[in-house]
Length: 297
Image (tube, rainbow, N blue to C red):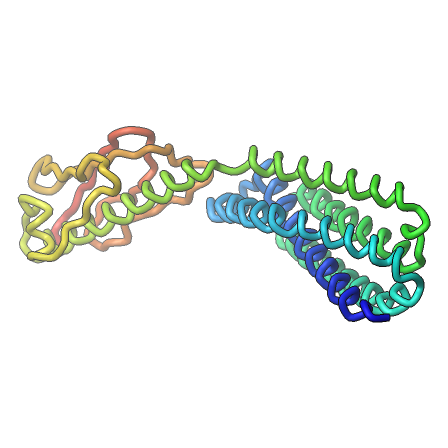
């Protein structure tokens, strides 16, 4: 009995690590499904969100799953030493965790069904529902047997279950890594997005200047009136502003990643002086965006 509190805390820590790991596993799986089965009815934000949730899930799984394996191993070893009293004490904790897991499963299923009813493609709905049922179902079955003392008398099967679970987790991690961009690519994408934002700000100022002055500015510096002019990040080539004629100009920047028109929504210049609606889609390397303005009457 002297180690009862210690064992209870270890069991609680194991269950917390388990549910965080399960959440991460589901998060990664959902992200992979979204990436592998894109929906034309959704915008670029869904793809970006799926990439982000895969990266977040990977980080959680790398940290919490090993912690779960270690804590569970310690709990099982202590259980065999302390006997039935320890098992009786933790039965309540295990059954409460199963109740929580069931609630999570039902809540997630509701979310998946709502998404399907809102127009998600059938394939993704089926795969996500199966993912939930398999992940939560297998974990619940393990702990139902655990509460009955099954794994206490079948240590080798318990080790085999842990080994198979580890293989599945590693497989999901590897697949997740292949379905998301590398850290270096993500960084370059963020820098490209910063450049697009800077160019949009410059364009907005040019539009305003033209509306007031009736002519295009000679330089970018004219637009900022002594304020800091946007600079290209990390030693990339400086932004270029080229006047083509009395009412048109180009803004140029160098990009490292290609933007995809299939994944990225159009980013229009919402100005009443714009003759057309423009996008900021770009390839790799130096890209120039031509803009035409007209004076508001």
